[in-house]
Length: 229
Ligand code: C5P
Image 1 (tube, rainbow, N blue to C red):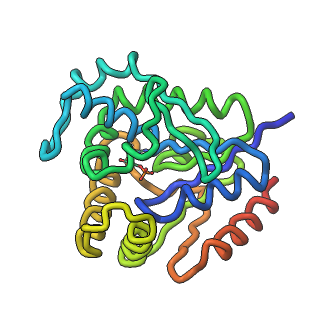
Image 2 (cartoon, rainbow, N blue to C red; image 1 turned 90 degrees about the vertical axis):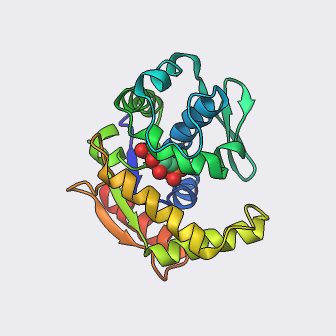
């Protein structure tokens, strides 16, 4: 039987993982959060003192040495998915401000990308998949049957993240302006790096979620998928 691949790419906080999880559950496919993989490598580098907040570049050699010792695991949970770094649950740690500020530097390292892209392709080889990230449609799964490029205005993305933080009691000291600046900085770094920059694939469908509810976005994407598979 053919394995179906749904690739969802787009800028930070566009709702990719929220939408991808719902769609994967509906279709009975596995969900692969590739951002969580870059975040986990970044966390491992922080814990091993290989990179510190405030650095403006990452040492390719030093970070690459970590790759062979970092196993990344996913496990289903009630509200989504747990992420493991060598058997330690890092689900919450990878969403903290230190990782947010350093992940784009780590993700720009060619050796890191080669290694993680290989792991991502192996995951997709086992099952039909919904995979979200920045380079899934352009690099990881270029033959995906469905490619979505999910965007929303930076103001709306910051507003959603701010509301989510307040609701969950996470980073409640961060102002809306600080969140918007951090999202805009990550987008800039992700779209201007040399290897696999954030970019809409030629054959991806652009979905602008500004002003749409989660349910509306899910319906739109479900309709796109049913036309293609
Ligand atoms: O998706 P999320 O915002 O969690 O991704 C965190 C970071 O990981 C991104 O800002 C980007 O630097 C990197 N990333 C990437 N390629 C992917 C997924 C994420 O470079 N496929």
